[in-house]
Image 1 (cartoon, rainbow, N blue to C red):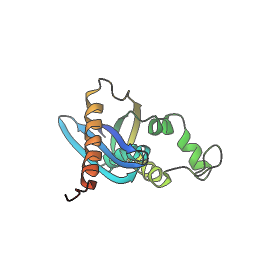
Image 2: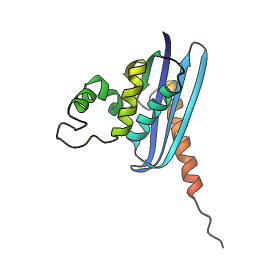
Image 3: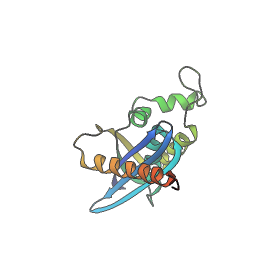
Image 4: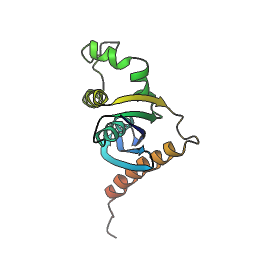
Length: 154
């Protein structure tokens, strides 16, 4: 099974607001970058979307080391939140519907195809790939915000 490294990040201007996501996949010396955005979203949705889009880019089942600065994403797997949500019919510990359920379901499907290990990295520190993902995700937010600006005739 091929070993792939996947770095991801999400960004949002306002929460909700314009959002962007980015992923960097590495296999040996090959690298692929993915990014995109949404006009009205949340930071957590963009963090999830980054991992989903990164995993969707893989053409065959792989062993994937995911690096994310999102405690929301990493802890859902590491602390068993996801198993609890699934066993309770997608309800949280206080019996409320899980936010972003459709994205979590997609991520569960993708993690059943690949052997995935989630790793938490410190955001905005000195991790080169995390910083590149952050810059790409913020670039997607900037594209959305600049396309929304309307010039007022004088």
